[in-house]
Length: 406
Image 1: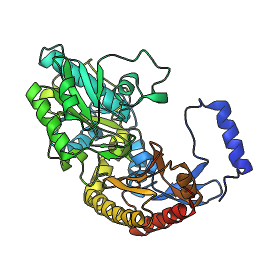
Image 2: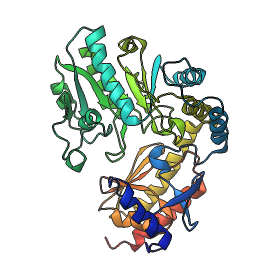
Image 3: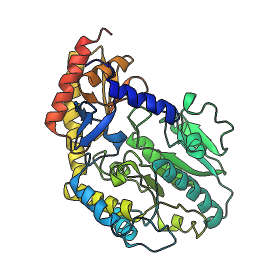
Image 4: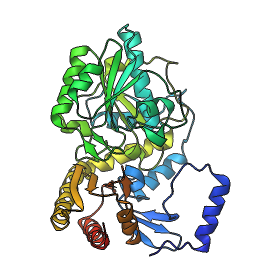
């Protein structure tokens, strides 16, 4: 396939340029429909989806059970605001909390909003419960926590992502990745929390080492500060456990979720220990749409399916299989592939050169994935992806590498 645009595609592209703010570097595709691990463009061309809406549609696209729940709940109650008690919210909370060691949850609409809530909760806890003036949040280099002003500042990346938005909020410190000495040096009597991703997704699919995570956990305990884990991309079975922090044997004081929580509907959550939750009081934090009837009912069904189908175990198994196949390609192309990395189906393939041409070649071969940090092919497919689909991807990558002149 070449990227020659059909007249219909051209019309859509032109219409968008007249209507929408130009904030996205679009792929040269317009998606018309989707089913499970397949996307279809305007010409009904089929693509295998190794992106899943950026780790969102973990149960696959347009799943019938979720459509049924959505329809049924939409006929009963869609939205009344959080001024009212609502059973779907409570049913979801019970199911979500049963998967982890957290005690309480706050529902919102996105990952950025969940991380913003976590930052606010940490500061409020220090002020209201501890009675201390501790407000600084420490994050890691190349982290990504969102695009609100606070979460953008927390994000440990420079460049275009922050350009033009200064002055950014104060109270955030970024330290080098996996550098315990730098982390210890950044902690002060102003520190409220350390905020981490167990695997940096946008930062290049970089898992934290067990040793570094234990250092962080001990440092938090020693200094009476909170540990926040951003599980927006890593949570909900993606890495081979229900939550990525469960690989490391730690219990965060606060952690966040979004992306896959309602399999495509806007949903986020802040989960925390009961003592920390006491910092939030009526009026201290809120959202109009968070935890509405439809998204709560769908998210509850998502959790049911993930547990019933043992998708964390499946993600672990498929990640191992994918890694083994990539290692075979590395033996074939040692000068082109540095190697695989990640956890479960949050998977990265590090190339020894800029991967833009490889990414384009894969798209030509009807494979959709993501390129991050210039050299990392990021794969976050639906957790329902099959061995056959992985084999098709590996064959396409093999051909792309063979064709590459790099």
